[in-house]
Length: 424
Image 1 (cartoon, helix red, strand yellow):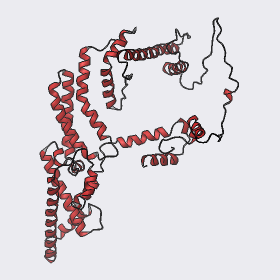
Image 2 (image 1 turned 45 degrees about the vertical axis):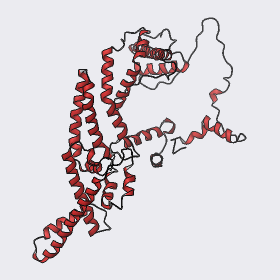
Image 3 (image 1 turned 90 degrees about the horizontal axis):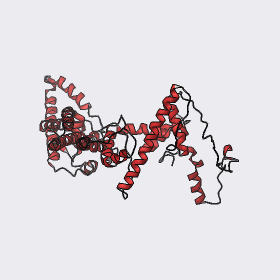
Image 4 (image 1 turned 60 degrees about the horizontal axis):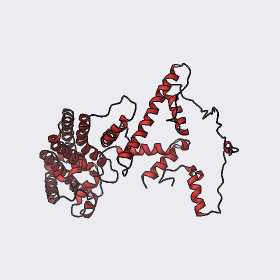
């Protein structure tokens, strides 16, 4: 539980754990620590019929006395007692920060009222469907904006009905605005799907980058005919231009292009430009020939760069009469390795592509004896990740573990917990 669920070491003191132990062995008594402030509070005070005052809380306030900070604390206190929508007035002194705090609380109360009204409207309009909430975008995640617009469009009718029943100056979305949101969602939906697919950790993703960008470009071209608003057309054209620029750069990168060719799901079909596919095939043939020469000269070597060093020394020795016969034999072997590489690459590329939902690693495991040199290249290039999302998830997981309940964890302990959690 400590590793899989990131539970703190003190979870043995939690109520759920105590209940579980009692279910296993009712006779076993876990030690408890009864807080002192719970003693002697069993008696309840009756509310008198006359005017009555009560103290709801006296809270420690270490932050600066700004309107935002004070409003946050008071909102939390009102939410704790369930009176956020029942407060009639707030009496303060004449300080500017206190007056601003009252305005912030008014907006917060309006927000709670709007949420309650939206829930009631949804329950009346669609009683058999689950109640949905509006989604707030996160500035550092573009797809959160997509999800916000999608939820707003799905709840457009309910939001309009809820606003009509509230005393607010906020106007519902017009039909033109809803149509603009609908077309924007149509344009951005493939990008959201591509973002989710490229963020996977357990599957090959680097080889998907070029094919996915090419499919996004084709999808945008297909959707252009259904887009009518000028804003959506401008957004689609801007995205197409950026995709073309990205595709041009990525198709020229050896790592990405070789990964795409070595993925039996895509091969040359995954490229946007046939010329770039031919260039990638030539690079793959050269890499395969290097592997063949490496195995012939030094079977125990695993580096792909060592043959390049030996070739440089051979080129210096060429032309010397004493070594002419040996150099000629080496050149013949090199020519033979180039021919063998060409045959292996052409045979591999000539096979039909496997299904897009298949695992390319399974394919190479089955065909590693048929294409031994390409297999070595495949395990080298197919491990390339498509994005840094897996790394960001590690930072998020470390933040979940190192929380207020576990703020005294040693760095080495945190490192081992994250290591075990991500490598189980």
